Image (tube, rainbow, N blue to C red; front, side, top):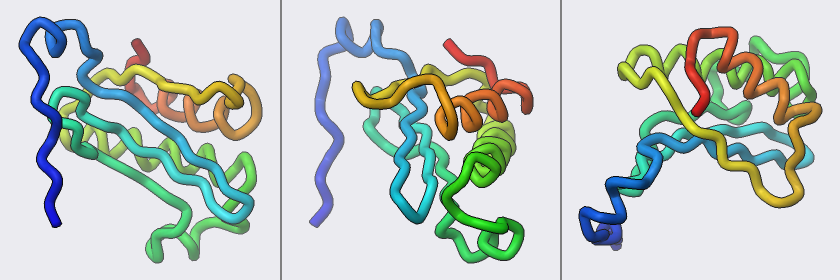
Length: 114
């Protein structure tokens, strides 16, 4: 079943940030994705569950893995010509540890944060 993206009036989409970074951390894996807000679709994503990345990571859940995921996500964003993203943190997420590693590696790779 395909769910169509939500229909929003133009006055609302004018004020939405176009690309939003969302991160998810479990006890085993780290994943991050950039969502195109007006169309509600995933523009780019990276996860430590990907088979291509598992061999290059020592563990799939620590701060070093989060930094590697951020770097790979930044490379994928640059390939799609997405220069800037805004960060959406959940209430329990603080700018510390894995969250800081992902955001800092994005910033170092050249992606601007809004």
